[in-house]
Length: 371
Image 1 (cartoon, rainbow, N blue to C red):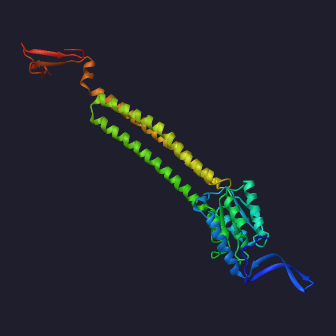
Image 2: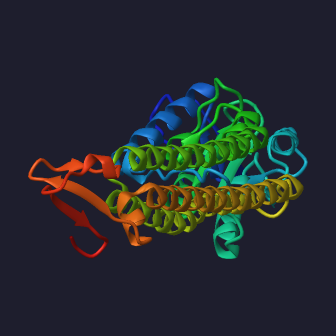
């Protein structure tokens, strides 16, 4: 079989062999089928040698690391289904975001057959395409116990995996080859579960914050509309009656049209943000809270529209009253009703009584259509 080291004279080794006797000479022979260095020091040297070889081959390069999904649609866990690691992972995921589905891909995590089963589990996860992130994990143990995660076949299977993968093997002090090849390493299985699962309470708080921002923007829009209408009212009182009133009426119509056009676009943006967050909460997210938020949003939108149109109608009515008042006190309006104005020329003095006119004076009478 394949050797992890090159045996030399004087090396201490542990072998599996068949013993035979050469009767002609009386010599014992060992037909060796498996050989490994004796002691953890030998395993550590084998670890360092493989680590350097894979580093030189580019398996640890940063450009191969892929980002993890913010809210996974499904998490695949490659581990022993009866170990403590899987229980720790499931406990943390249930606490932080219970809506995320979890699929266990069972495998041995210790012993000679473990490496081949881990590679097979990786291939199965990719073929089934059920998950958008994988977690390769097991609990702590000796260097020999963790050795399947130091096998070159496992390292290359991780490197060729098209699904982002987190390695969480052993305790915080344990380091294995899979940690270097994976897209990200976690110190423990529980830490890996924390890394992969968003905090559901935090996302609900973000939704609440979004609702508050939406309400604040609506109030600000109403206040700005009121300020614009008040400004138009003040300007109409300060400017020339006829033309200024017409200009401000046109301006008011323009503001009304712009508000009418701008509101659906702004509402669509807010609705798009709300829909995106709702979709990311996945199938089992707190739907009742989202429904209450949607109902509140729709109610606020209707109230905003009602307030805008009510304010516009009131301002149009006020403008009409002001225009009528100005017409009623205008001298031109008096002339239109059949009255006239008499002036003494060339002084231009207004004649208000017959006693102010003398025989021989030059008088000018102004009518609505001439003088």
